[in-house]
Length: 535
Image 1 (spheres, rainbow, N blue to C red):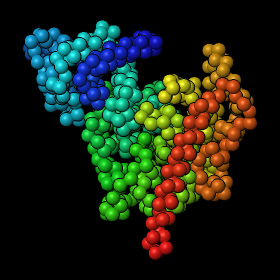
Image 2 (image 1 turned 180 degrees about the horizontal axis):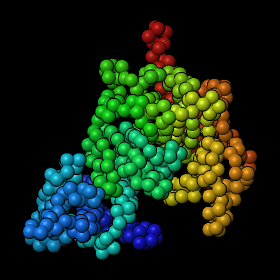
Image 3 (image 1 turned 90 degrees about the horizontal axis):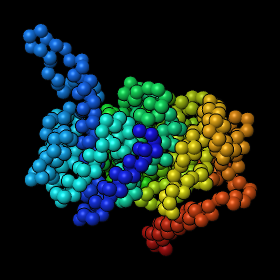
Image 4 (image 1 turned 90 degrees about the vertical axis):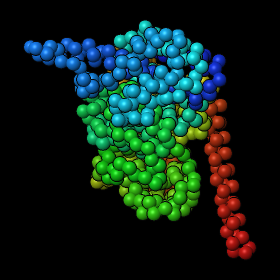
């Protein structure tokens, strides 16, 4: 199946499933998890059938007892889930109309969970809430013959596509469990997680892990042989989504439920080769009086005074890394130049030399809110290299995007490759740059070729006005330890007729809104202080 055929199939399946939901009594949230469960079941059956055929070819034959019976371990060795007969897709499809399909699906999921401890309590079992006709039509939709014998990676893409669409429709509160692919791919490309321990302490639906596996496979290796995944997630539903997502992709991970502010269930401080996450922004209400917070080894630079957890997360990501580890994470733009105690923590982090790359992302990349964000990248190997420790790449991508719709922006594959190439040039490696130039020439991609070579004509990193600049710690100090790329890269001195001024004004408007909110908080604090002094 070609990429275009897969996209057409994804669109057709989604439209059919979404049309059913629109005409039902179910909310997007009630509908999303069970539908993802049906995709899981359909994919598990495909893998079961393929594995069964291969296992049967290799089963040993005893002179008197005959062919050895297949076991669950045979399927585990084949990286497939053993399905009890009543949990198999063909059994479900052939059920008589008189069957209670909702309860049957619930029981089918329970039977699969009973076979696998890692899936216990994970699979959806609320199909009894669905109208019988709705369920029957859903089964028919996913009984599409185009899905027969579909390879696992393609099925994984369908699962990710549905996750994406449910996030856009508001199911599970969107950003609560789903990080847009553009941001996930940017993080993975920049930290290049290709070995060792990979940890996401706000794992959501495990999109970071799936993209890491894609990255490793594109390098010609199997993820299972290169990395070990660990995840922690606060909510029960998201933990289930993550485990199911990993199972659909045939990946192993140790994912546990726990509130990262109070629990460090994997005890990975100083042990991770790679950390990546999209934590919730601007969380307040963390109980700093708890001993687990006051004495947290993950907070080497101290507790911020304000009621905002951004600088808890930032310290977690730094602390989990081993001495050569890299981290990449999404953060509220306001954290890059926050003042007071947060500024002091940021100064300490900058002084370690670990701040590698800072990336500004424009508005509309998230489905549930339009605020801009910043991607932070740490590289603790820099700390021991005097020259590298003194340098940080500032990359302003607020004007780099594709307009998917009036409400949604993303990066094209070419954008992602170009961003990766810029970071690689900054690190002194022009291999990707040269490969992209050759590919753009061969494919006639004149616009992308021009964009890349006009900015980096000699295949070496240079500062580009309005796009990127390498700064040293003295310059960061002179700018009050601000880590906002726009402060350093400047503005390109020209009028671009293709530039989306409406979007840029939206960015400015959102930034102004955030500044006004901060000003109101500060004003209230000043007033409170004055009243305490009796003034």
